[in-house]
Amino acid sequence: MKRGSTIFLKSVIFFIGIAILALCIFGVPEIGNIVAKLLPNMAYIKYPVLIILYAAAIPFYYALYQALALLSYIDRSIAFSQSSVIALKKIKYCAITISCLHVLLLPLFYLFADKDDAPGVIFVGLVIPFASMVIAVFAAVLQRLLKEAIDIKSENDLTV
Image (cartoon, rainbow, N blue to C red; front, side, top):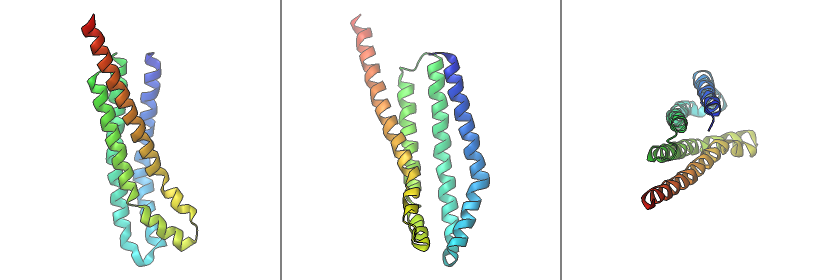
């Protein structure tokens, strides 16, 4: 694979990391304030929302790190190795963790939908958990395919 394409992907991962960091610094506290304003009788719910959103950032950044490691394996021509399988496994677990953490926020979306009489808000709350599960399934499929390719490669090496 050309090195330029992995450099492009590494830069995209870097910019995604910067964008989520900006969201964590500026957006998450504002989301907490909006929650407190929309549910004044349950203003204390602001703190669990902040904790869940910041906790979801930890596996997100770890998954980005694993994606960078995977791209470096591709650069070093060791993409078909056990290290790549392990990196995909870690990305899968990070995506599942992010999805589970955001599912904890779904009752809050239900309260917003009930208050504003807008049932579509619940579907908005399902976007991140659904996207995370898609990433987890995709990483699991890639992990299995890569493991099978490594097994076939090792069998062929032993045959020759």
